[in-house]
Length: 426
Ligand code: AMP
Image (tube, rainbow, N blue to C red; front, side, top):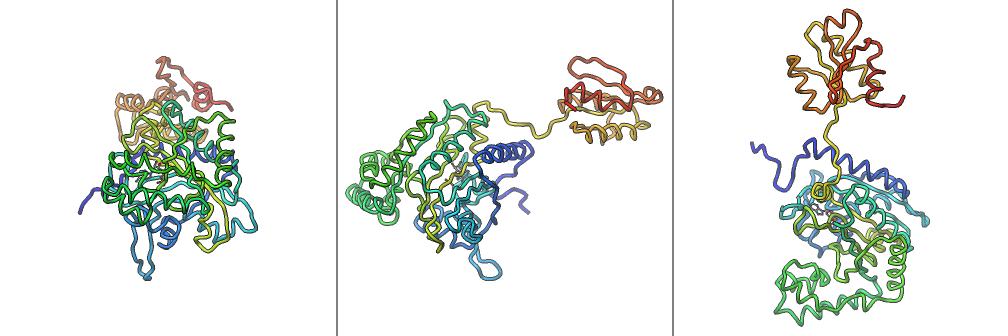
């Protein structure tokens, strides 16, 4: 058999697993301050949830979905992103009935059949948040601030991040604009790549996102929606900017920022970093999707949210020297001098753990010397040495690995002594 993980996937080994849990913890604590509650939707959905929601003409739906027929003959798709599922769940469970607002966040794997490269995987992990039934521009600003604060909380320096902001208009102003861009693509057809020419009919705004340098140059001259916004969209956009200005969140307007999903209306945003990532430099992004629930047959229900990518965020953290927790932390190592005191050593380790101290001991019949080496390797601050001589007088030795100081402690007092040495409050 092939013992390698499939192309574009990776095992989360302990260091990375610990980082993933840290990001989830950080998100849960921060998002709770903004009123978000956790939601877990299935990793797969009926294919229609994504084709209708994300849009047939998008790269995700047309090229990247893992779709298969299950044994019951249903078309099933592994989720390529989280928003469509959350909105489907909100509709199914009436979370937004009678105009009720709801704020939800999620964390988990997403699946896209993409060409793998640095920061681009076929299974990747996202944390995302969605605010439903909240039409006011204040919530756009709130969501953007929450995403920005999340990266700040992780310790990615703001000097390495850029927050891009744009508006995609709505059903009043976008259709005419779309036509203008399609017309522009037709006029410049010979200078644009095949893909952009194809987009002219299906999804002309995506031509702004083409990575081909010549297309980028040509598209720099295309008309901008900013100049064609309807009154409602212009007012909304300006209110979002005012709220961000009031908090001093340093956004950059990017009139060419179009995100890869059809469901966006009005506000879109993206956070990019300039460290640790190559061309895949977006660590998170999102936008408003006021019409999405209607695509599923629900009532008009404005919404907006973001998703951030775990792998890229971790790379940015590592590249900028942000704190990333270790996979395990050992505070104390219990070493035993010989086999005769194994039972007592086991008891000391158990008591320490029960009192909240991260404790490790030997389970591989190591010599005392190599137990000390192991304690060092694990970064233990203290070692409790259990030996037959001390034990016969009811004592053990407590060694501070920093100062190398050793003290004799009564067996019954070891937990309190360790906690005291580690300055753990009662
Ligand atoms: P999106 O759902 O495309 O708006 O992406 C939101 C975030 O998810 C991006 O900013 C990336 O950090 C991350 N992301 C998207 N696609 C991938 C992928 N194929 N591999 C790794 N991370 C991804």
